[in-house]
Length: 531
Image (cartoon, rainbow, N blue to C red):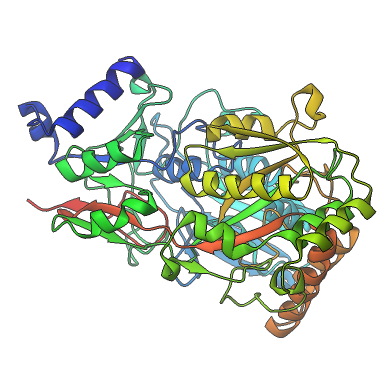
């Protein structure tokens, strides 16, 4: 099926309110139809940090540990673990009966290769591997870590939800360079990906994996507990136009719209047959991420000038008119969580003074370099923030080239370290989960290692941030971790690896006939439909 044909069919059914064919009505009892936030551009969870890739990955792959809504870690593929030698020897035992989608047994050596691949991209994983003297598979069901020093949060690292997530895959796939995509999608999760039905930019499909063995104990809660797949099929249909997506949900042509446009939420709430609720209590964080390798933002003083010019409330008013859905001010950690504080917030809480910011920019030596600002059209919140950012940079006197495109193209371009004249970029609007900002352990943007392994596009250099992050892992208690996090926030407002824009809460919307939708991002186990 061609993309044009699929979108035409979807739009026609949704907007004209036509009755569904008998085959569609019959499938509705066993098929869950879902509208993702953006197109699924990348299928490899170790290659891409995109949310949509993570959501796809949790259907197809599985993790050694899961995490519940209280951020507690528990075994998932793992049966359990033992710890010896004063915390320096960990043995993780796999559950019996785990199978890959091709029918092969899940072996410990598969998991060892998967952990190594994940750790080459993930900052938390890199920290774990730096503390590891040896990672091996002494038998088919045992994963063994011999550590150089104790690493009590080892299960939390392997089970963390923020991207990159430590997904398990067969050894032959895990041996693929993590900076290249795996050649096929084979996991051990509750659903099997159907590559033959993929229509790039429009459609993806999954079928229930009958060989999946859920955990026998526990309560389904986010990524922890038994993963019971009740639907035979799950179909993802990309519908970029918000009005069309809303109509498709309202007419019953689609069951679940992941991220409805905020301006359409009141209409959806008014419908008796649609549930609208915030399932991710961590919310979403918006930020401006500068390219610290290229002029002009390779100069921290120029980054500070932009930061002092920003008014977070102006950005968030452009995102949503519902003040109840916004949480400000946003520092370097998720507001209301253990590591958040008011330390060093003056750059975003002091009264705005554009004239002063202009002087700061001139004193920093800005020479009129072209500033390529990127924003994603298919994420309304990012597009709204991009519009405000473009206006602000122009008011500061910057030579702005505002590039608005789809998120997949932004992801491809942001990976380039080239100058703007060679197709590079200067600054872009990004959106990360509030869960990504819980602590220095998982925060993908609060790093200062330049182009070192695990560094995210933007590539800031800050030896002090890295020193503090290392100290955070060695902190003896929560109070010490909080003190170090406050120091990191103060340092970050000097080095400016990114500019925090604001936090907001994104509702999800689904037909009331669905039952069992869990809190957190979209997961597809535990969900069923009324008879």
